[in-house]
Length: 227
Ligand SMILES: *Cc1c(COP(=O)(O)O)cnc(C)c1O
Image (cartoon, rainbow, N blue to C red; front, side, top):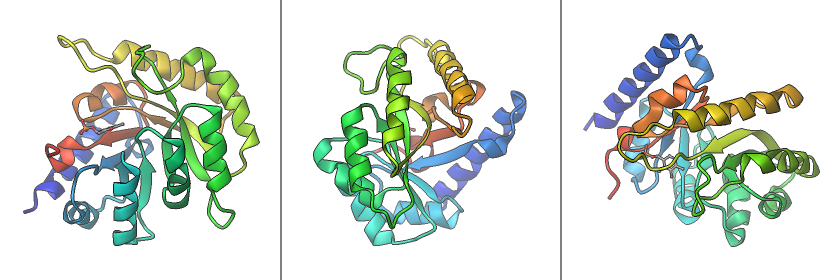
């Protein structure tokens, strides 16, 4: 079974082609392999192909994999909804959290991040499609939360993240992505250290790269359908 390896090669190629097509440097775009619901064996196969960044949605499942693999070269990204009672485990085990969307959660993640660890890399999740059911803050509320992040020395704000609406009759997320990209660029005027725009899944990786994504979160195209 070499499938995962070939899937990864295909995606790396696709990312490189797409970056060149829109005049971007492929090196500024990271592939995050979303391994939720996939086995340790599958993750090991990805590692042996050279993939080191993995994304997990469920705290328990992620922590278990992190402990079993116990590989200091790996970078683990939490991309699920943060529940306050799980924030301690996220801070203790993960390297990144993509889904910070309020002061309270940021406060907890900061509190539990030990001084022996590097600061936890965080992204603020934006609800770009104004969906009531979706996590994340509205763009209007972004400046205030970014300012609040100054209170949290154990967190390092790296940028923004969004999940687009389920596409209906082929509408593309490009308009929403552009709006996010503009907000990100504006923010970078004041905070030049920000370097990460986490956008794009299997179905819209090309659109995401066109719109400035620096980190695509890909599950299905690497590991196949989740069971
Ligand atoms: C599951 C998931 C992904 C990966 O989605 P695929 O369609 O399998 O590529 C990306 N981002 C988030 C937040 C997810 O929950």
